[in-house]
Length: 350
Image 1 (spheres, rainbow, N blue to C red):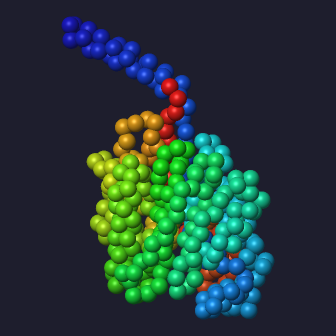
Image 2: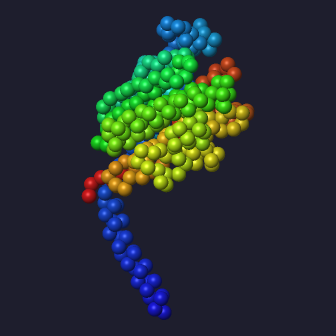
Image 3: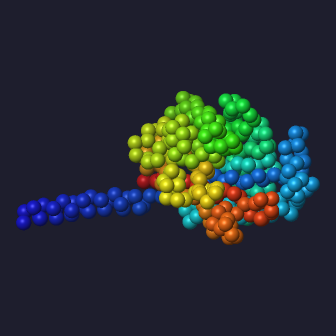
């Protein structure tokens, strides 16, 4: 009887003590910010303007017969897809969207200025890389959320070919400094195992950039995103970056990969030979995951944005990302990759 009374008293005290905390938290304003990544699958314009002829494939006279109609259809598709990134808590879309497989700044501006998302007033960050195919990485940001400070571009010299530079964008996300490193790591041409050292070198470069940022500002949050051409459990991500599957115990200058568990559950961003990969990752530093302060940005959700309209409905491609071309035939799709997004939140006010 005495034991029952003590347990009941303890339960009453817990409820009584928790109630003011819940009430106080419910009176505070919650801010949510989305950070997304999207591989745009060879978004080239139709003009043969590359001095090395790297873009001739995507011209009206090229093998893909890439003309104005196809180009503007793809621009419209991508803009519509991005418009669907909006949620109840992020009604004007993500604060930041990293992109890859773009030819130049102009194609990014065409997407940003499309009527479907023009009202968001997305700003463009772009840099011409030395990539042999002529594709770059870039970043779109909403100036209502993100204030740009500086941009640096980092060349991957540890591989024997020309590839994409890594773009580091530093700024303030509603007053809190973060850095976003946008990547498109070397492909798996020649086989995964043979090409793996190239992506490990790319991961080492990303890690070096992050360490340099922390040497200047130990409090800055770092996000590594991109088409990494590796899965979360591969050496480049799990060993070189040290990006963990679980947030538990990740140190402030360590990394957590929320997309590892997504792939474990069978969700991917691209499919090859009837199996899923998740190359399109957004990896967060520990100080954006395990912060004790409610006033600091903190990760709370990751999504693969595999909307039904982005999926193919034909034959053995059913359920895969609906791409622009397949086996040389024009499909009029979106991309061969699904986009990904993470959400951060914090409490403001008293």
